[in-house]
Image (cartoon, rainbow, N blue to C red; front, side, top):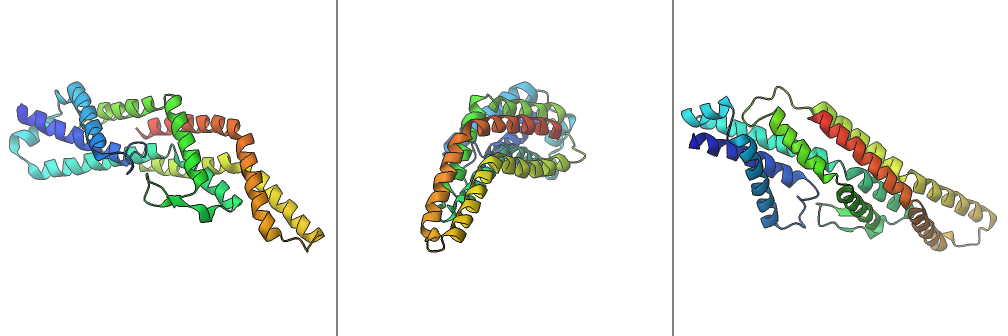
Length: 255
């Protein structure tokens, strides 16, 4: 019985650890590793107390017969499932990051990209600002409860050691597509303002060719972009809330 508990706790810990590691809110490089380990062990202990004391028949068979090959395959399956679920929750902040990167590109701020401590690549200042705003709204609107409830539902629908016929890859791919669309929708009002600014600068260049629009055009585009971001910020927050609601429904469909 103790061997079965050890096997069940190991499988739960693998699923939770990969979930925490893939989640951008907690799995970034800016979060200390000791915090990630403590969070993974704490969550795994909580779900082990709820489900691990009654492991599946497959867990009993592995612990009784010492089927190490089956145990390794089960660990790989739990790791893949936890990573997939963490990646799905990472799509919550992807629209905000896409919107910020697109607006920064239209403002001509691509050269101002700085190193992002939570990702492997660099990001513009606006992309980080939009992502930080999304994180604040995510926790302020209690959407972090969706993370815990969704992970809890996975242990109910797919207990550790139970076979999974097929991973729900189709809803995950649909979520990636929708995240791209919602990112462009978030950036649409500000992008329209910047497009009108470019049209006005083009007309000014036609009317007064002697003006050096290369020097003043960048300043005008940055000023117009910042004013557009400030003006449409309440609407962006409302749209982010709708995006979180849609992504929550997508995660539940994934489970």
